[in-house]
Amino acid sequence: MTEKELRKEVVAAYQELSIEGMNKGASGNVSARLGEHMLITPSGIPSALMEPDQVAKLRIDDDAGGYDGPCKPSSEWRFHRDILRNRQDAGAVVHAHAPFSTILSILRKPIPAVHYMMAAFGTTEIKVADYCCYGTPELSEAVIKAMEGANGCLMANHGMVVAGPNMTRTMWLAGEIELLASQYYHSLLAGTPHILSDAEIAETATSFESYGPQEVDKH
View 1 (cartoon, rainbow, N blue to C red):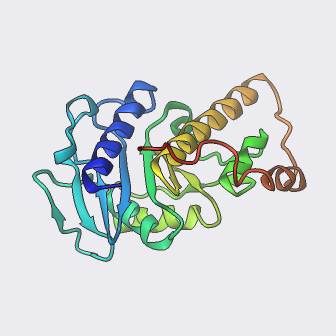
View 2: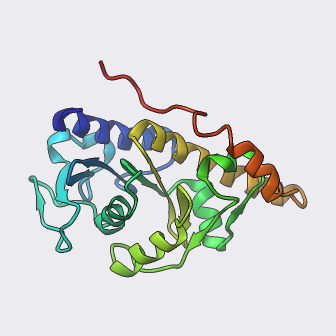
View 3: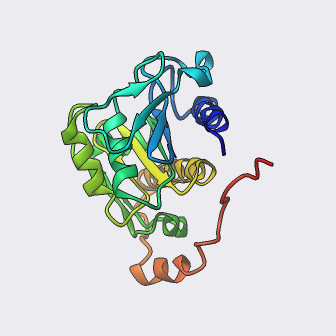
């Protein structure tokens, strides 16, 4: 995919989050790997007004956060960069203030294996990263720790973040983590949810490498 195509994909994904009710206004952010660089949504621009040429370009190995483009990158560029730097399997990162994910993050409740779809995240529990001020190195460190061995986490009093090999898969994971959060939240209201065992999730995980969308053919 060319840089121009990837810029369009980043903007389209960010706009989809708003359409699906997972973000409002200029909240949340989306990034994608472009060789030794990453492309990330700009700071403070609502999805409906965002254009591909406003997407910021940063070197993944640059600790200073220098960028190319007319608009400064999202204030959360650090954890996007650090996920892409630490996870060579990651080609895209999506962060959203999705309602149910955010509710559980406010309650500081990890999501247990209430549904077999937990297997899509490579773990038996979606953890909650410690609260740190947005945009800080401390938040990035907390997110990296919470995502060890997993494709996503909640961020205390903030929202959720997921990573995947490409934008198609990552956006799918964003929807799945929000659905798991909703299922867990509502099951707690109804009673005591039954949690699947590690063995039951492991059994499902064996077939999940090829489950769900992988990448949309752009040609």
